[in-house]
Image (cartoon, rainbow, N blue to C red):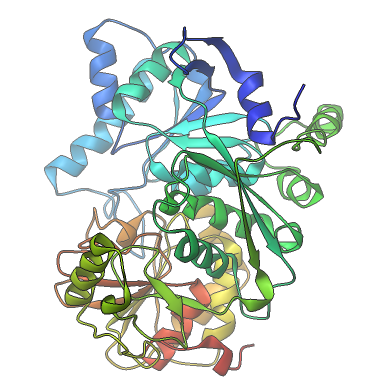
Length: 474
């Protein structure tokens, strides 16, 4: 038998049965996370048919998209005056109570962005299949699991049966050779990959990341890699579990304990692609050649090294891509050949399910310590969870940010998706650690430049897009 990739092995282990000759299978899903934004329609359809949730214990629900991130969080500050947002939050609470499902609501000390909470709680474990109503569910591949986003009708099916109709994907192996230079992060790696293969370059595939740079990377960096793989249209992304992951998971609330832990790790060590596994595609990157990245356009693949310039659409032979570049330049108010380094910003945002974990805040704080946010720049830090926020305060990171003039806020999706009060105005230009720079993503008419948290920090204190390699850090 031909060797199997790790992705194929996980799918094989979760296949209930093939669905005729359609090429689809019925896939068992181990666990899911719900949020207040994408679940109401699924519950409404479920209730209309009089169906219960089949396995309530497989579901964890969080409030993360629409909640306020005001610096102080209490019953008064969490009152949502927008009727639609308030209805979403109340509906989630009602549905969780009705079906006996666990909810981390706005005042829960474990509240946070679903893709941050799931890993820090140990909710997703190696070898699992994980689904959620959010495209960035690919994040959980860093746990040695298969994670992918689903739509509302699929959420309904999942809640009713704990299965999904699924079409197996092709396999893409991305090997990152060498050692990453100082100041280079997982965000720079994945932005380099997306620029190389394009915003649809991994369509129909699940990526497996491997190579020296991946093995040396911490789990939180791997979470960033897998999170943003969907920006290349990947249906999933995965990193084989290893001692780095086991050390990260050990002792977390939802993982096996004591003898069960030892038995689980023994099994997890076997979760890897077979030596004879054949991948449909192979892509390689040399980590030693990766520079700090920044996007110039309105798609994550429209980016260059910080010391590069805006490309000229006239040099693009593909007419559709050329038109997209021209539209992006008009929206971003940039010109071909323009240097990005030195471009003034009005806002700096550190947060999102991509880059709001404790390692991200530590990296950014190294460039902020002893400095001040530049005049005219509004700088914000929104931790990915209440537990990340508490840890950052215990380590003194919050003090560093506040002393520098950053707003130190509560956890939530915040300005990544601009579904609450945290949004930009037309013409604002933001250095952002988020995952998408689409038109209007952070507010109508707003301009977003994606980069790592450390690069956001450098931009905030300089007031312009900056090469962090020129800024001594602490």
